[in-house]
Amino acid sequence: MSAAFALLKRDLRLAFRQAGGTGTALGFFLTFVVLLPLGLGPDQALLQRIAPGALWIALLLSVLLSADRIFQSDYDDGSLEIMAMGPQDLGLMALTKAFSHWLTAGLPLAIAAPILGLLINLEPERMLPQAIAMLIGSMALSLLASLGAAVTLGIRRGGPLVSLLILPLYVPVLIFGVAASGGMTQKPALLILAAISLASLVLCPWGAAAAIRAHLR
Amino acid sequence: MRLCAQNLTLERGGKRLFTALHFELQAGTLTRLTGPNGSGKTSLLRSLAGLGDWQDGSLRLAGGHAEFSIGAQSHFIAHQEAVKLALTARENLEFWQGFLGGGDVQEALAAFALEPLADLPAAWASSGQKRRLALARLALAFRPIWLLDEPSVGLDTASQSRLAALMKAHLAKGGIILAATHVPLGLETTHEINLGAA
Image 1 (cartoon, helix red, strand yellow):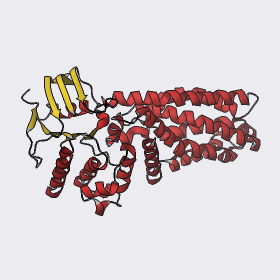
Image 2 (tube, helix red, strand yellow):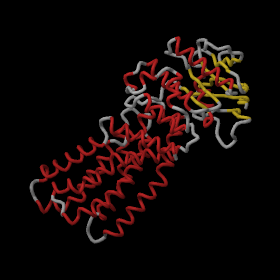
Image 3 (cartoon, helix red, strand yellow):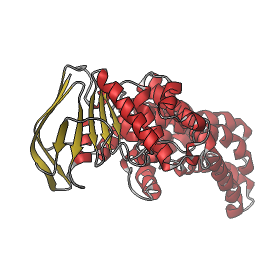
Image 4 (cartoon, chains in turn orange, brown):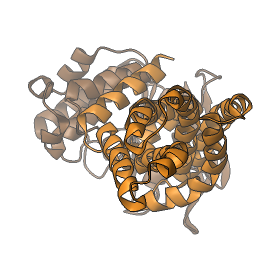
């Protein structure tokens, strides 16, 4: 466990010290939300209707923005090889890296999204359900992103490829996330969303570790 | 402790690097791994570290911790330094201390005279200094087996003799060192595996 803590500490430190982490994700999110009413016109009723879904799509895209970097820098400088030698479990390391990605991308976005939602006329009473659904759903987003990042390791300019691979897997999170953010089916959808996150928690680190091992061979 | 390879055959990218390689590395010995470029030195070290496959034969460790793989009981110094440029030398070693389990960061810095750089970002270090930072992992956490791939590349003479002293101390503790190198390591080597001749 101490190895996982050391890795988490280092990754958070790197995320704060290097450009392109949390700030870029938040900036991208803000830009998306600002551009939306410019493209759709000042129809307040329309914006209110599409706000939860628009925020979710902005969340998916912002999380993907930094997805390809989850393992890439450790792969490039050889750290990943040493991590894969053990005795620490590589799956636990993959989980730790997905967790630090969530802490630096998913979590701040999930907190900021409902507030930025005011820009596209999100109903105030929907802010809390939106935040809760995004908090739960963004975990699945980071975990799936780590799987995509592991599979595309070593491919130059792998970023767009990660997006292509992972976006289809984001569809269930998007559907149940939007449903959990409001409307009649809120609670069952939230439970299904939580189930998706828990399933990703079990499967993605294991899959990512297998992909990393295959790449190093 | 003994590290044995029997009848080892290794291929990389469809090309056969060597066949039926036998060797036995005893505790307390330094073995030089030699051979021309592309003869499979790095591939052999990676296989030992558990990072690469081999096609035939066996690799086995006798007298170590049976529950750990060979890789888990080894240090592997590869061509890449595994140094994070945005972190200081001390922060880099603090991470490896936590990850590899134990060791004294100050001692590891001192082993390669890195104290003056300790609190500067590693991005400012020269390539030789980064190499020293990578080698400082050897002094940080104890691993019985050291797999070194061209360890002295880019090192100045003072650092080379520090590396030699560190290897000597490791051998005295009963460690095993396998070093792929083209240059003398400043240490008497009695064992050699020549992949070019195989």
